[in-house]
Image (cartoon, rainbow, N blue to C red; front, side, top):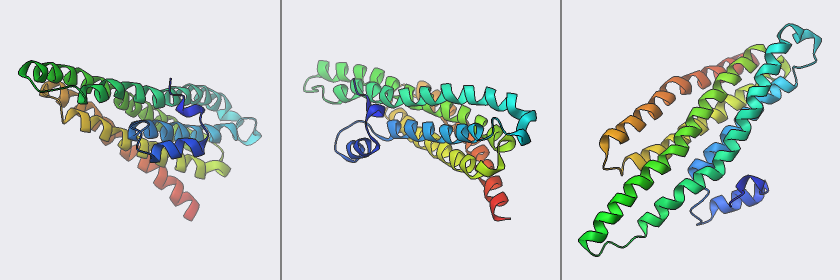
Length: 211
């Protein structure tokens, strides 16, 4: 329905900057995550076939297969995030003039908020997987492409943190606080583990390049 990733970069940025409700921060985070993952994958592409790295070639090929799949999954989540926002947008527009209407709106809103949390949380999970891959690409891949691994780590960290805000803005409005706290706990856990891991890759790359 949306096909945002089929648009040119220029078109995507223009619609992102417009008053259109989608794509927003969630979709943008998914795209940035896909780009970050692809940069790690690029390191692998520049490593395969090089005699110097023959001993890790099988590992790199396996990493590239995982990265190919992950890139596609993150790109799909750009549109999935827009689809997940639809029920919430409709819920916000529901009437609330009578007590019955207020109750119905609250019920629909709660379900829509939970749906809207699902995709950004999945984006976070995929970014965490991408950071794991980039750690290995940076450790085993071509030194000539080391900067790309560092950029990939920085992008995936940004996407991880960006998607988290789309979780938190929805859990904040939930009345089911137990569910909200459960979702928040997973999001915070992903940030606390994988943010520092991405930062470590970036700092190692920076240190290597500035030495």
